[in-house]
Picture 1 (tube, helix red, strand yellow):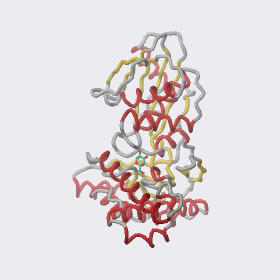
Picture 2 (picture 1 turned 60 degrees about the horizontal axis):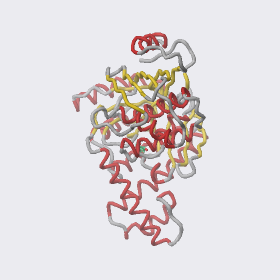
Picture 3 (picture 1 turned 90 degrees about the vertical axis):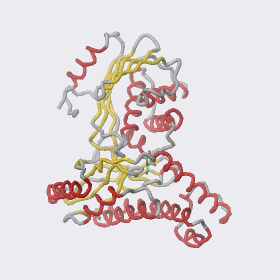
Picture 4 (picture 1 turned 30 degrees about the horizontal axis):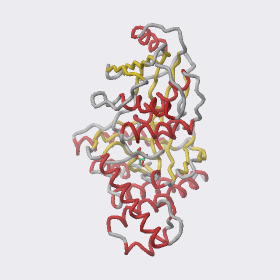
Length: 396
Ligand code: GLA
């Protein structure tokens, strides 16, 4: 527990007061309940913002300099808004610089600022700590500079920062839910129209539990890009054969897929089957949640994992193990890997009464087999990015 006063004290020790606008802001990480690798295929996703977040404190400066201090890593950078280019040394600062670059490119003038931030989102765990850093930076800079940027515009701007400045070709899901997440609701996002609907996720009997495998494969970016390419090839194939307007795999029905699957190269066919079936699962999942049918939702999560493992091949031994162990526990309705894959976390839907038992046995069993003690987090859908007004808050 750290309070805001303490953070301001650290801020004041670090920087001289400029007398200009200042404020504290936060942006959450996310966990995706279902709809994996569908966002860049213009499909559907259903993430929630989680209780873990990044908090940033900032004050405007009289010049074009930005000075940032990362409280967690005790790392510091200084750069000018007039001369933004990706750093090879301080790669973490690229998320901040990228966002500021995109804000300026969108035609909003920026003044420099002093910033500090602290995070309790585990890194490289598939819980979108990068998106949270982008979003909290965008919100801090927008508010301090009195800019009017709508949350959806902010999400797109942050995604562009990651695509163009950091060089990761991610979709829109993470930045979107970090900006627009709502307490007690999952966000059903249509990644083509960029519209969303709120889906109530508040049941006194069930809980979302995240298990962190604590492993991360190095190939994640190249494999991610390869999957995107494979999806593009599949979409092109359908466009050519179905002779109608097809922009992405989102436009293909399961029947159409079945009719043509044998003509596709085997790997491409499996990639396409994952995306097409996953889009159906998200829509079925939303219907199930709306009817309070949590066991159907859990079943869809299990099918999603199977598809990500067999067809999309983005899981790994440790994630499969966490899912297998979870499904052997009493009270578990569903379990699947979440995020890009190749390590990171699983998301589980569990009856509340069984959670303690679940945590104990997953920790024991997973450690027995892998030698790693997994982290387990219980979470409810949390609020998206916001300005922090209250005096006291829980940080770490
Ligand atoms: C990462 C990307 C998202 C999405 C997921 C997979 O988190 O940042 O845009 O593609 O992987 O669903």
